Length: 343
Image (spheres, rainbow, N blue to C red):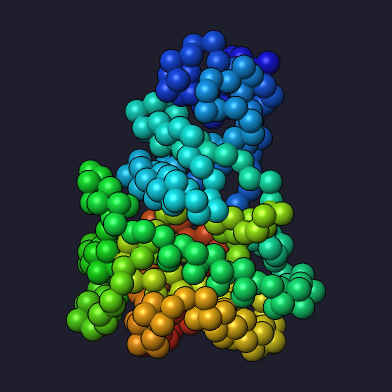
């Protein structure tokens, strides 16, 4: 039994937040929480409570989100899709940023699984060694979970998201508008103009869906029951192409740090996987739900704008990371938006 006087500052604040949220002042950890790697945005801890209250038994994960608005959005989306039976961890508890943690807390089930490929810092040799197994299975896994997600009922979630107070973009059009606003505020007229061109050319789509928008292998966990999807930070209700175009972009241009020769080696492999991903998806959805090339192309440019605006924000703050997938795909997404190479 671990009380509130031991552990790091974060684990002490986590326990205080859990006590406050449950009303159980005697709540304690069964063992010290452990950090879980994965992603670049939220802090993630695995933990288990001693003598837990109802709904908090077993192995749990604390996702600690620095932006409270984003945290509330994530938990709303994840809670809805989990409630519809989609394979994502069930949300057990949330706590606002006014809690002792000072950040938004999402507590969810911990899933026993592993990423479908190695870590986030893969080198070329490690990547190539995994190619045969990845090419056999990865496109099917990604396509299957995308098709399953897009088959869910989007209406209740759309209404819930519209009711959230925080100003998160609820449509892809609003998503692009937000990027234009951010680019304008940074005096990046090249990116703002690219966003305006996108807004002027948005293709129509017949059927909205719950779209993840960040579907890539590192957001999957492989379990005995199949893949489980994580990280709902940019999810929204809109064109399913918002999901498919991002996955296609990441598969076609694997964000693996390597030399030009290494990139040339990976490029045809990635393109082959991307084609197979889209073919597998199309084989699993009805004719009325098919996504044409025009919608895919437009949404690829949406994600290109997203990536470049985020990079511009890091540059303005002097916080561009030494390693990140966006750094690898930056030249690609600049070409997608017909922008000059970065100097």
